[in-house]
Amino acid sequence: MKKGFTLLETLVAISILLIAVVAPLSTIGGSLSSIFTARDQMIAVNFAQEGIEMVRQKRDSNMLNVWKNGVGSWGDNLSAGEYLIDATNLKGNGALLSCATSCDVGDKKSIRQDQGTGLFYQTTSASPGENTQFTRSVKIEDVSSVEKTVTSTVIWSVGGVTKKVEVKESMFGINS
Image 1: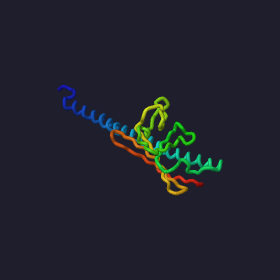
Image 2 (image 1 turned 120 degrees about the vertical axis):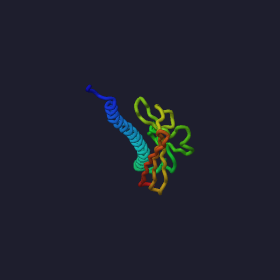
Image 3 (image 1 turned 180 degrees about the horizontal axis):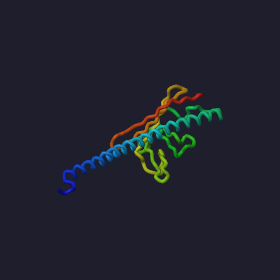
Image 4 (image 1 turned 45 degrees about the vertical axis):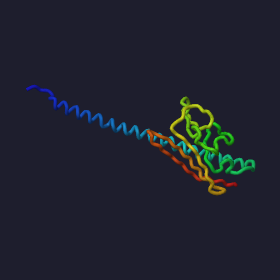
């Protein structure tokens, strides 16, 4: 009698080996998809929060101006409407750009990334970098003379599926 493997034993051994290798690979593939989805959601939440922070910064600057110079109101340049964030122009009123006509013209809502520095921009002027899949708009609504509701919305699309993150906050002023 010859010792060795029969064809049947070899096929069984190869089948077991394939199962041992393919199962973890399919799990890794699913995990990678989840990691990219979580990354995109984290980026979108940060962009949405940045929109809120820009409005808060404008409100705080207005209040400091009132306290320092005795002129203006906490709500100056924060009237109800839709806005874009121009992070390339943070001085004066440039950071919040009103969309009196429409923010949907061209790619104004797009957030761009400079590939050299890795920094992100949303601006109506020419900026470095390329458009990302993310767009952002900030909406301000008047609630009362001392309260405004700010909603920052980021929308992106992955594989033909549109996703959205909204951050909403009430802001208050102490002078009117």
